[in-house]
Length: 177
Image 1 (tube, rainbow, N blue to C red):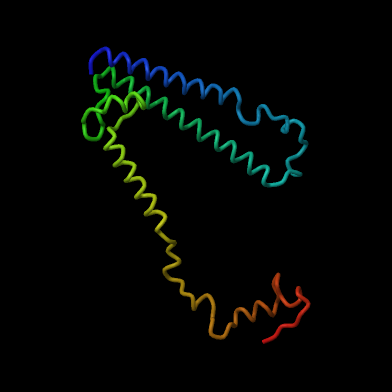
Image 2 (image 1 turned 90 degrees about the vertical axis):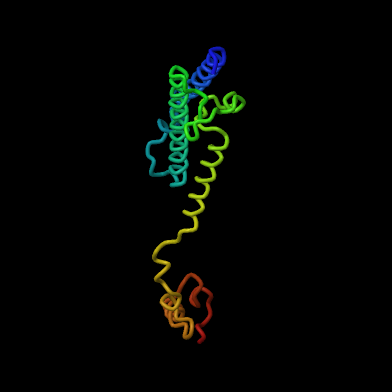
C-alpha cells in the first residue's frame, strides 16, 4: 500500500479510536447509578421488589459488556495502527491476501478479508448450532417408565391423595377413582 493510502487509513483509524475513547469517557462520566437519587433516598433495599434489583443488575452488566466491547475495538485499532508502521496493514491474517479497500474504508481495523470473515462467521454459527443440539446427559438414561407409571397411574393418585393446587379440596369436590 502506498504512503498516501497509509496516511488516509492512519487518519481514519485515529478518528475511530478517538470516537471509541469518547464513548468510554461518556460511559465513565455517566455511570449507571451515579445520576439516580434512589440510592441516597432509600433507607433499605429490603423493601424493593427483587425484580428491581435484577433490573439494576442487568443494566450494570449491560454497561460493563458495552465497555468491554469498546475497549476491545480500541485495542484492535491500535493493533491496526501498529500494522501500518510494520507495513502489514491491509493483508488478511488468515489467507495473506490483500483486503479490499472498500472493506477497509468501512471497517478500518479489519484483520480478515471478506471471504475469510464469512468463513469465520459460518464456523461460529455452526458451533452455536451444535451447542443447541446437545442435550443433557441425564436425558439419555431417564426413561418415561421410570418417571410415570402410565398403566396404573399410581403416582397421579398419590399426588391427588395429598392434594395439589387443583385438588378436590380446592375445588370442593370429591376424589373419584
